[in-house]
Figure 1 (cartoon, helix red, strand yellow):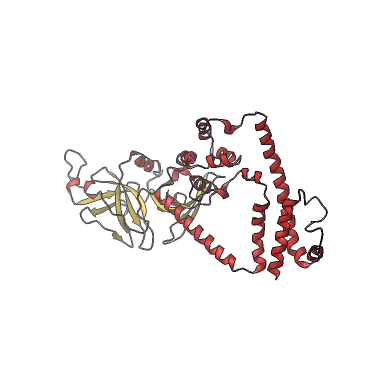
Figure 2 (cartoon, rainbow, N blue to C red):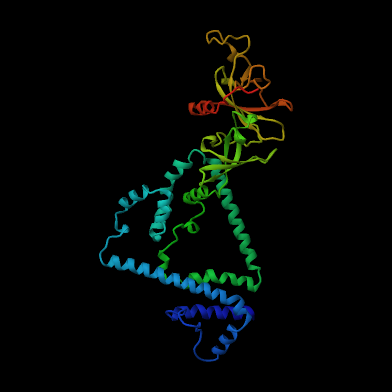
Length: 402
């Protein structure tokens, strides 16, 4: 009975909003003017249910009606200007308008998306956001990040479905909270449907490029990437690169990192752009990378090799070069090191004689090698890109490590 009573009064309130031009300018809300309904309204307004629950709702509805009136005036003024012969941005040819929008910044596109529904549809199109996405995030956001983004969409959809099912099971009083969103749609004047908020985020498809871009800028989306010299250049991680989950801070133009949950979990803040990269291979940090370059390795080649301190820790990628055997003088005309099944891995950032300076592997049957004392060496990838090699040299420590 209580639910029926609330539903009836709610319907009366909404229906009267259409018949009365300014129902909120009067001293009292007029639901009925004749008949036994006066008794029903008087009893309901004096009840605790009205003063404790329904009265706050009527205040919010009044505010929505006021906003609707102001927005209707704005649209009417626009219509009057168009009727008076003033030119509108939408009067431009499509090609001209597209050229203008292509030159807008991301913030400019967001502002233009709040002009009207036509501009919103244009400015939220993937066509305009691909360029901005590539310019700022193209080097960091790769296939792994897009997969993570899709997984988050699926999780959000499942959560919304679950919340929807739970809402249906709520009590009658809790279900009344759904009245306001319904009411805001019903009583909004038709002309207001052409106006959108400047952010426009809530109306975006979750799989749009604009949605991804804004989530990255706000730091809402934690994406996978790799960090050079993790933990602020800790000596124990010099010339290495580790997987992490990253979040952007637009205020400082830096990143926060959460390192792999395998082994010791660590966070790091204020990471600059030049210490980040997208993962060059899809091998997870706890799995051995399959090496496909072992037979091509020769002295002087630049490499990255997986290394981890113990079986419980994730792999990191460490920079090194292919070295010569002790008996080889390094002369290219006499060197036969590349013909040997044994390959010398040299890490020149460490002093000669250090246990970390050299490592030898068999190119024919290389798998994970090592022990708990010296760590475990995994897969190898050869560096062919001059930009990758130059990046490692820029990160070279100021002094030789022990």
